[in-house]
Length: 206
Image 1 (spheres, one colour):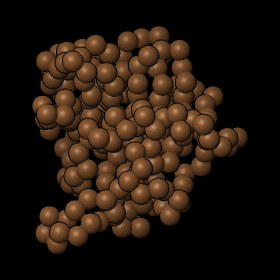
Image 2 (cartoon, rainbow, N blue to C red):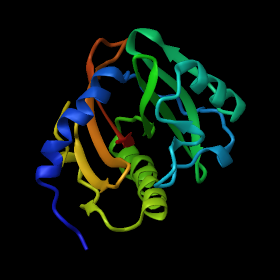
Image 3 (cartoon, one colour):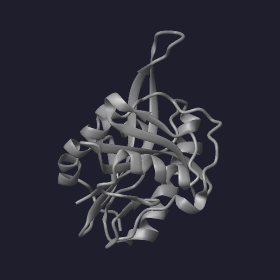
Image 4 (cartoon, rainbow, N blue to C red):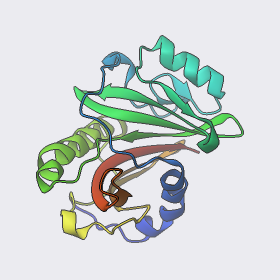
């Protein structure tokens, strides 16, 4: 059953704005290295885990330690933005895990899909990544949620922090949002603005 998202879209704008302002919009390369797939999973309701072995309130040092012990690759820290990034693998698909901190304590996690600009990328790469995230989230948190269909590329608002929110799980201990975004970045070679699309799943503990 498809349910239209109205007020949820507006309510989540502030939630997404925090991520959108902190996250880099640099395009990911095609050659992401594998992490240990067994560690890449969403935490269960009633547990403190957000994603993999990461828990709300973990210090940045603890998160870095857990990521290394979990076999994640390409771990990097962006101190001015207060985030830690690494490659992650979920059901054979490659993503980027972005950990956001507040006062050096883990606040939320975002699982980002690859970023691309061609129409073929949107249908052939982004859509399967989005579906894999949705299937994984439904399997973990159940089918009861606010949901809508995968949007057409032309229906995504440009540079809107919320993009198009396709799914929202409001649970006792966390909120999960699945969305598709369209944004512009400046090409370093041509100095022209290029429109990129991506999908992401954000897990915000309560």
